[in-house]
Length: 135
Image 1 (spheres, rainbow, N blue to C red):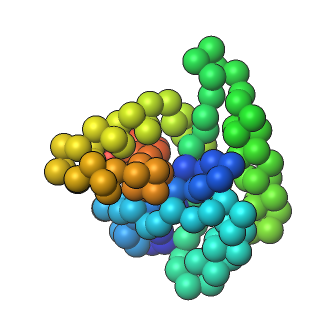
Image 2 (cartoon, rainbow, N blue to C red; image 1 turned 180 degrees about the vertical axis):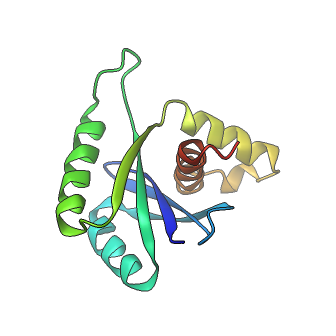
């Protein structure tokens, strides 16, 4: 079985999470500058077998698209053309940043290490866990 990749896409930074090949565990991968996303993904897909990418879908409270969600869908369209064998899907990401902070606090992460990089990675973990129904 191949890995699944979770993505918390943002205009400045993108948090990434990945499963093990059996999809038992979801782990933080890293946070990258969004401008390097395409190259990072290309390199990663050369090294690892991935058959599912799940983007967090940021929506307004009324369910309408945000500027980021429109960018996410554009990115997904381009990836589907470039990698037609990949399944690309979306997961509502409402509240993931808040939950990520709470999880970092609960596991004892010092305040100095609860930065945007860690929060983006943990948000990607939550997006992928929710999609895979790993509660």
